[in-house]
Length: 180
Image 1 (cartoon, rainbow, N blue to C red):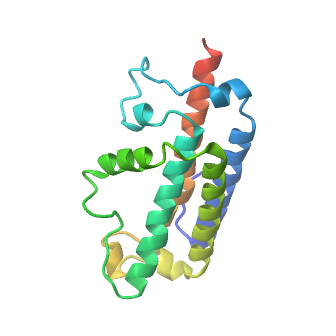
Image 2 (image 1 turned 180 degrees about the vertical axis):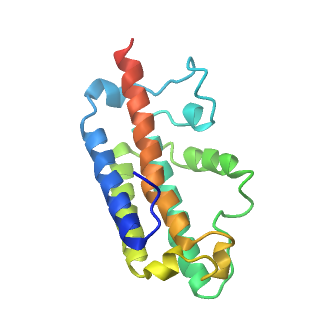
């Protein structure tokens, strides 16, 4: 599916990938669900998240926390209070460190809680998206606080693109277990 460039495409892609993600989750066996993710032997998986996330909870919490950033960032800026998307002290060069801190924060969160948190935050993000027009979402410089990007691009990143990332990670975990 190509990256959405309109409100309708964004809503469709976000909801489609959300449903696909839940189908992937629901198809996990007990063994797949209860076996820790371990990609340490795969030299192609160099990004930090392959080492960071150890289970489904970690993935869902990651998605939830990125939803929370959007849900805080948009209203704060709409109220006229200039705020960056990433919380201080992080920036786009150090967001990997932020992701580790978010991971640490939720190591006591239960899987059932992470599922509920993610479901509720997805709904909140979709409700937020609905409040904007296509032009507001996908025209550059409508909002000065989106920099050189569009609000829609941020929304795509925290929904459909991130859901795709989560599904790839789950598929890799299942494939690894089946190849043992």
